Amino acid sequence: MQQLASNDEQLDIAVVGGGPAGLAAALALLAAAPEAKVKVFEAAPAYREQGAGVLVQANGGRALEAIDPALLHRLVQRAAITREVHTYNDTTGERLRVMTKDLLADVDTAGFTNLLVLWNDIRRTLYDALPQGTVQLGWRLVDCTAPPSPPTEPAAPAGGGAGGGDAGSGPGLGPGGEGEGCYTLRLVRTTAAERADGSAAGCVEAEAPGGKEEAGAAKDAGAAQEEVVVRARCVVAADGYFSRTRRAFDGEAGAPTFHRLAYWRGFLSEQELAAAGGELPAAVDPRLCDDVFRGSHFYTPATADQPIAGVPPRNFFFFPAGGPTGGDEGQAGRKGEEQPAGAGDAAAAGGVSGSASGGGGDAASGGGVRLVWNAASSEVDAEALAREGAAERREGGRGVHQSGAQGAAALARCLAAFAHLPPELRAMMAATPPSRITEHITYMHRHDGYVKGAWARGRLVLLGDAAHAGFPDGQGANLALEDAVVLGEVVRAHGLGAEAFAAWEELRQARVRTIQSDPSGVGPAAMGDRVRLIRTAAFEPLWSAAGLEAAGSLPPGVAAEARQAGAAAAAGAAAEGEAAAQAAAMAAERKVVLDWSAGVVRSLVAAKVEGPPRN
Image 1 (cartoon, rainbow, N blue to C red):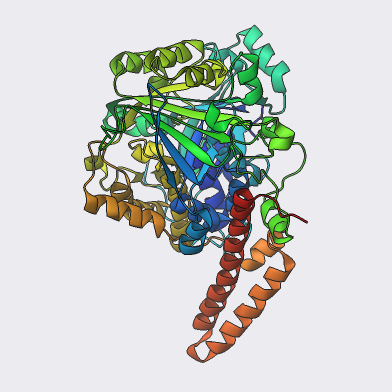
Image 2 (image 1 turned 135 degrees about the horizontal axis):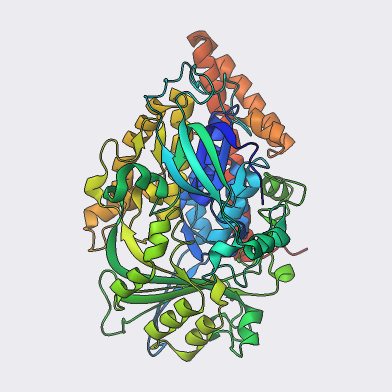
């Protein structure tokens, strides 16, 4: 297990939660305040394969690009990009309709196309970009207490971006002695012994130093939990929809409310399906389909004569992805090197790594097709399932893809709820390793709770599901990525502290409220606003061309072009003063980089749609 530097460490920023929201926030804050001392505390002793498919839309993709274009490029490489959505009746299996789209036209007109990615791939992409040692695995928050008096406000704004930011003075943390004005976080070490419910069984674990031997020794010893105290001037709570950090200040008042919808998620490989005696569904069987990666598949009770308006009472969705990319199992215990910018150079050089056929990763090296599935139902006894997960909610500190019941019992309940599905789909579900099953009930924060002080209080701020858990409509991860980059923007503008966090809350609440859909149905006007906000999302980059070049993530030719464009723009604006010239140069440099990034994205999408170029 990873050790903390001391038993009484003082940080500038403590991030609670090592899922995508927390990791993205750490990257954005390091970009905005490169001198800040940042740690991410994740309760899981190891990162392992879990969660299922996540839809990354334009707003999430642009948020990643604003933190570092290489993050977006890596995710596009790993994504499944489907150009067809096939809909079926979920009892007979009858195909009802096929909706198609021109992916390259999407990229050309909107600058982006939707990506289907594994939740674990988002986490891996973000984790790999952080400095080694930033993420502290195996530390679960027990309590968080505020300083005895309001912390001193920052004396100066934060500097510009790490990994590409502008030169700056660093975070304005203000005066104060050891521990003065700090939040106190009490954490305990988690071990494999704490996961006796089977959530770790059979998982491919990413071992931190110490690995399985240490975890096993802890389990056998049954020793008292090790506890540490960490002091931090700022706290970012990204610990999921039953956030323990939030509960430390709000009690149950800030908890999300119950909603009658049960979800199951899972994924498996083609080999695992075959080993269980199952066969690939016909829609993704290469013997029957010339391009198994071209479509996703959606099953509801709808029939040709009786379509369903609004949210169906139940649905089953799956899509094929490529085999796992190499090194998944090593993501939390790095193998000696970090490559935060690999995607850009490969694409710029004309070579595109990852599966050209549209899957996440290299199918050739990973062993064929992975089947990623989600099942949802409002027809089950959700109250009983909610009681099943009560302990998890009391525990808190985990996101949707990590929380809830797991294992064979959860899989059995899923199969019972979806006994009506065609046999090939039930066989696929039944063959999924129980350790990769996640079962949870939908909980949502009420929009009337999105008020001043709900998400930011002093130097503590809530992000992602900890702040605004919503209906599972595909925007959860995207809004969390937005949260992160906007947090970086305001910290760069206001300095690191309460002023920035309050500004962030004011910016975020109205936008999140509009984008989050209403499960009872939204009107055309509201839906139009939602779609527009998603498609037109734009964020202030946290990088500079010079910083990206120094980090090795910008090809030399692009860097030279950016310098030339910046110099020309500065000369053209020189008569308006130094500040205007600097602003013009920055804007020109950014445009060159963003144009290059758009070209990389297009080439990656084209490779998945069209296949590798023929010689």
